[in-house]
Image 1 (cartoon, rainbow, N blue to C red):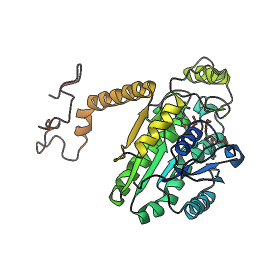
Image 2 (tube, rainbow, N blue to C red):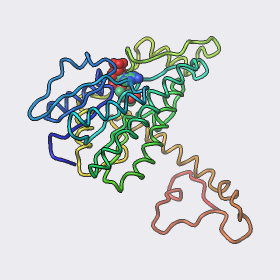
Image 3 (cartoon, rainbow, N blue to C red):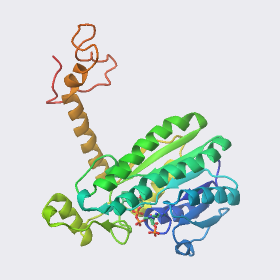
Image 4 (cartoon, rainbow, N blue to C red):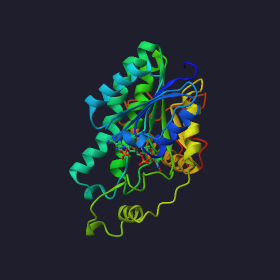
Length: 309
Ligand SMILES: NC(=O)c1ccc[n+]([C@@H]2O[C@H](COP(=O)([O-])OP(=O)(O)OC[C@H]3O[C@@H](n4cnc5c(N)ncnc54)[C@H](OP(=O)(O)O)[C@@H]3O)[C@@H](O)[C@H]2O)c1
């Protein structure tokens, strides 16, 4: 990581987390390529110290425009050190209620856009010998919930893509961090959210209840926007890039609950999984795995876990 001022590129800088990040970066004297669908929303932002602010119009659903903006930002600011892929929104309501267009746009914005952005910046980061990619996911990227199936699909998608990408580019000195915020008050539950069209068949279901609460603005937020932005900047400029960064006690609790349940489900299916191997039951290998001596497997210690016979 180069010394300050580093060059950052941030998508979705008009409001919320993106804007808080750009504000924090400029206050720290960093140089920022701030992008927004409407760059006029960035007109009041000011650089400080040796930093520079460069702005551009970018709708992340347009792959060709992503490449143009990345190339132009690198040309204007000389390099790219940290790319923050933040733009996104949530479609709320039952999956069956969503229109095809709503599903496609949610995926193009939250998943396809970040993939194209990463592919556009990688040549620059590799040529420089390193850099960072920060992808904003969500606590919903680790745990699905009714009423957000399509949103969760996009966030689980970025989790899979960026986890894999991290391993592909580590050898080039490029660090990847997937940020998983919990609830924080931004435009997310306000002007940015999109609702499905309610259908009577889903009345009273968990998806419909969430949809109604989102519509009425009754979704409490736990996180502090400025603290989250500062944490992202601290981590992105730290010596090593953690693969994931959960922000907020609600994110921690939700992700922990999701991971614990998934691990318990996996352990419950251990014998069945092994029974489907080609050589299962022929005596050449145990039908259940031996416990590894270094003890990376905690099933034996987990209360209520099914013990292998
Ligand atoms: N707030 C939360 O509780 C929360 C929790 C977990 C994860 N997140 C994630 O945090 C990220 C930022 O959301 P936020 O909370 O800061 O909400 P926000 O205040 O609504 O900001 C969303 C930003 O994304 C931009 N955007 C939406 N569609 C875009 C597109 N097609 N192209 C370019 N920009 C687009 C918006 O631009 P416009 O101004 O043009 O609409 C806006 O700048 C999202 O990825 C979201 O999934 C938020």
